[in-house]
Length: 394
Image: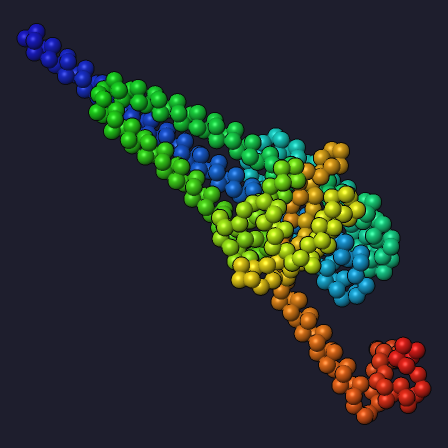
């Protein structure tokens, strides 16, 4: 009888341990799954923040370029087109910022956004005033206002956004470290409890847990892959030059524009210099140096860049330097836009104009052209002889 009770006690105790370990295992796996979901959510938010900040940086940089063009365009139609683009970029910036504010934010992020908002509020009046001056064709006053007030404010906004961009990595690492530590502790407790029951059950459970962790890593890889694919879909090629180290990041799109794969061009300044047309390299370096010395608000250069097939493509290269508190540039970021088709169109129009002039010079009739106010803009040789004056004198 005592032996029978002892057996029942042992079986009951064993069943209790089995049920306890099973319950602990199920609870641990559930917690690991929740932690993996939390890690995945953190990664998704991190990638979304990077995308939104990139949109705000692009809109801020393009608004500065557009303001400069507004203050320098004499053609009212072209000026109106740039003004519409300025407001469209502002709407893009506001939409990205509004969406960013709806995300979970650290105190440091909120502080930077508050500073950025204050800078925008201070600078918007001067920007609108510069646009009004340009619309009244007071270009000198508009450019002076941009140089001394509007553009410096826009640069401070760009700098704050750049700081926000760099802050994302540290915020992401802190959040991921906390999740990883919780993940690790849960994993260790789970393995310890499973080891009490049996080595075999513990081993099987460990395999399940490791598989859960692998799924989390796979989700992170897929999220990063989606981010890379989104960057590949951009029209412009991006570059980021670390002036202090000399290294340059070229986006996959930048390399694709020249016919190369992502791993086929080294991330170095020489990769850029060696592909620019020899006749364009000196001017590009001069324009970059002028911008780094603070002589220009933005860097802009049209250059020919050698494609993999040996032909040259026309690129519009634009960028802006990031400076430290003493004003020294330590980084420069920008984009390349392929304008080959535009240049080909311009050349075709020029050739057509030249052919038309040759025809007008050779025909036997007098040809006179005037502008909308009736002023003579062109006389062919026959017309010059008839009225006794030249095109320049008319």
